[in-house]
Amino acid sequence: MERDRVIERAVAAYRALADLAETVEDEWQYVTDVVDAYTRSLLAMASADGARPLTGQEVAAVDEAIAEIGLITDAQKSIDWLSTFPHVVALALAVDLDRLPDAGPSGPDEVVSDPDDASSDPDDDSPFRLLLGGDR
Image 1 (cartoon, one colour):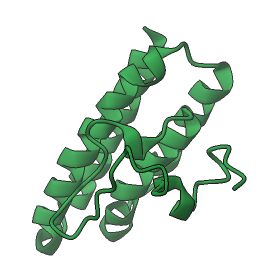
Image 2 (cartoon, helix red, strand yellow):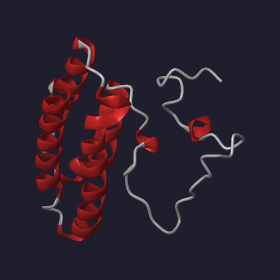
Image 3 (cartoon, one colour):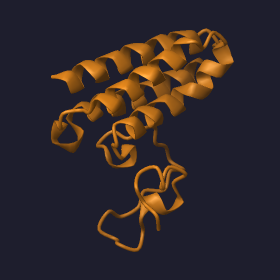
């Protein structure tokens, strides 16, 4: 239950950030597409890891991320954070965002690796690899 409330707070903050970003007319379609995709990803985190209970540190980390995006007042900067915030939340909750069912935006140029191919590990190129516990 607490996990659901934490995700609900993150989604509400994300939507407020999106409202600010949508004020940039030239970026409206991009903002809409990114927000749709990452909102699904944030919601999927509610059931990630079998919806294990969150630690106090995880809750505090998400709340800190929410507070940080709440400080953004520049619409252009809010656009930058639309794709960053979900990754910060995933990192705080120790969730692999790339392995969620609705992980972020995708498009025709996105390379999708075969999950059964052991030689192709998406974490190898991830800047979050060390933070996710990988020391490869």
